Length: 217
Image (tube, rainbow, N blue to C red; front, side, top):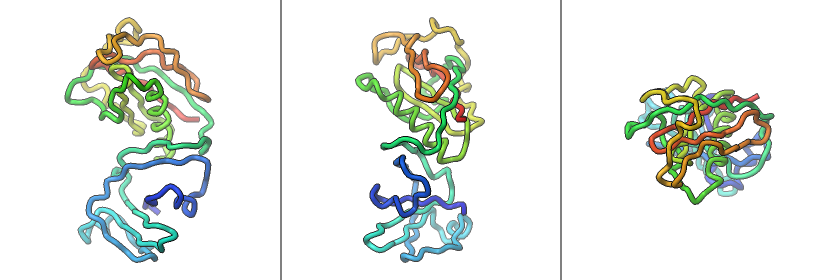
């Protein structure tokens, strides 16, 4: 159906999983919660739930199974990240640089990870999170952007164009400005991701998004 189930503990996920090997953590906007008994309601829909004045469902399973939360609108899933594991059906893909784009306080793309110059692995975690979100949504194309070194933005919307909001800077590496946070320009990073063709060389400086299109095979 059109519902999405989320257990509250990692060890309780196996009875719902069709494929195993990857553990994902989701941040979900539950809103007003309708609590049902352990049998749930197989006829529940988004329209029926909203008519009752609720946004999500909590199914009070037996203690051994744990409670499950259910949403019927994919927009309530705010953020997905990979916790551990590998596989999950990704056979690789392609990374394409779309250029440097201006940004302002009126963000072109929402910030998904705040800048952290002390964490050299943040860019890779952001990339993994985008791929996980694309898999979960069943889409093959998404947008990935780095600003001020490793402030990370991404979108699993295949037609995302919000990054264009404040204007184009260019594709040349020398146009990547200095990050105040890292204290340098990031114009030839050479970041590669296993199974993906293409390279992340340019990271945006202050108020610049270095934007990449990620396509899954």
